[in-house]
Length: 89
Image (cartoon, rainbow, N blue to C red; front, side, top):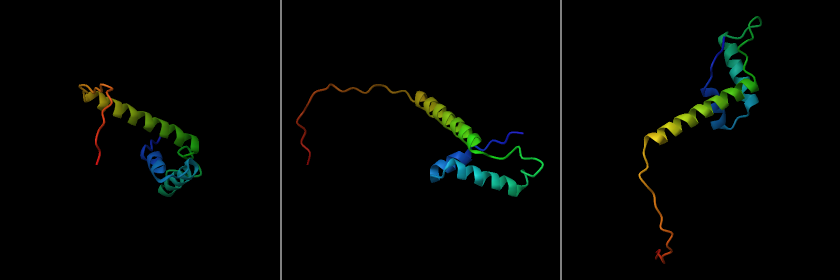
């Protein structure tokens, strides 16, 4: 059974916590909920699982941002390269 934790790496990045610490916290929460037992340790979160999930979340957010940017058409943005003496007060 695979357990997706998409918000876990986002919160770890936001708070500036290392991957190892986030993995330990996530595993301890799953252990407290009873999802991780001595007989069933498939759901233990390690650093590599967290890094893969982080890369997946970043890729999804990047794709979402690009699709939103393409939905808003940019008509045009032009500069003529002319140098003016602009008064700034």
